[in-house]
Image (cartoon, helix red, strand yellow):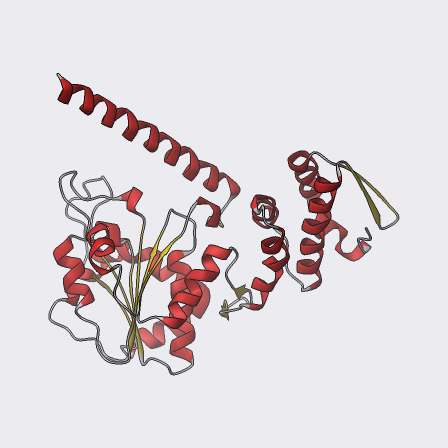
Length: 326
């Protein structure tokens, strides 16, 4: 197959690292000469390598910088139809960051999540770290705000310590709660820019607050995001979901494996999954390790912890069963 010289370094990676990964994973051999790439191996494997390289080349032609995540995700797709459809996701641009970088879904799980946000009133985005749950929700909120679909954005998360005792923090109330809300600020700065964010904050059009501040309010014509929902109690989750008013949209994000509640306390996110599963206009999107778009090592860490927890849970159940028999 032909790989134009201007796209070769982007498609093949630095020191041909992407090409070597494709060779190793698919067990094919490649030789590149004068803009032509010769691929040898079994017909099935060669066809798959060609299909993946065509997708990477098309991404490069659309002026995308190809990352290792793109290559890993294409290699993980076993269905040719999905591999062929991968580039179509590139059309699904939600918005641009302040630096002009497009924000768009990078996996089919993320695409399904974005589509669910567009179609439903309340969406639960559940999955491990690095799957873009909060970032994509934030991008959707800012887009809706810019398009005058909502008049304000409200971002909230429970202020709970992640396994550490922080004690009495210095400063006023805002400085005490800011560390808990920092990830939300980071996403807003990146997409909206600090100046625009500050102006909208001063006008009260963007509000970032702990979950406790939601009690007693009715939120009309707003885009509301609840982050770290695994750390809510069932009562807090019910309180939050009943705040929704007319012309509002709610996104709830969380990772069930990173719960910081006491061991005997059930998560409001887990209860909501059981109670609200079959209600119309409420969607649940389960993202997995395959949807991780951070450094490739993050995906390996997520998978390793999943395997460990499954093994640990299985051993625990077997031990309990043996005790029961005695």
